[in-house]
Length: 102
Image 1 (cartoon, rainbow, N blue to C red):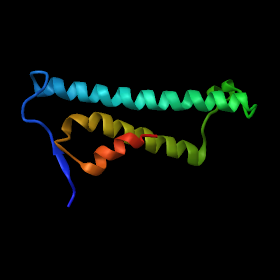
Image 2: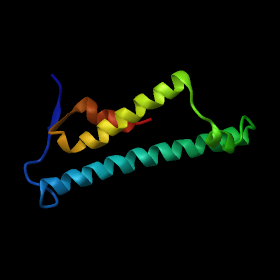
Image 3: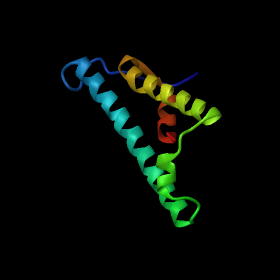
Image 4: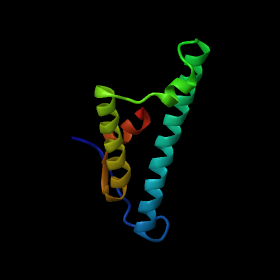
């Protein structure tokens, strides 16, 4: 049986809608920082090892399977962030997966 954490009855910030906006903002900030951190480290390592220059990443235009993958990932992110206010409960697996954002 899946363990869940129920959304609290009482809003932390006075109104459920404000809680929803704060939750959306928190999701965005968490995802943004993790991704930004990882990209910066990757760019640094790739340039340091002379694999490529950072400007090559900036100038690259994804095509084919990579473009499709990026579209899928973008859509999943939008669903996750925009859907955050509608979540009423969270499974243990969903909460545990939060630490594995990549």
